Length: 85
Image (cartoon, rainbow, N blue to C red; front, side, top):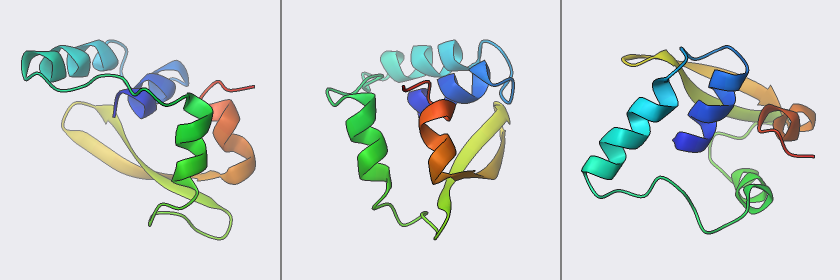
C-alpha cells in the first residue's frame, strides 16, 4: 500500500501527502509500513499476482483518500513507475 501510493504520488496521480497519512494510520495501528524484501523482489512477486494480464498488472491506486481506481501498467513500465533502475 505504501509502495504503490508513494509511486503514484511521485507521478502526480495521488494527492501529495497521502503516503504520509497512510503511514501514520498504519503505525498507529501497529501495522508494517515497509517490507524486508527489496523493491525488485516485490516487483518480481507481483508478476504472479492474480491482477496480472498478458501485457501488465492492474494496480489499485488512489487519487485521494476514499477514491480509488484500477490503473493497468505495462510490464515494461513497472520498474519506471516504482523508480527502479
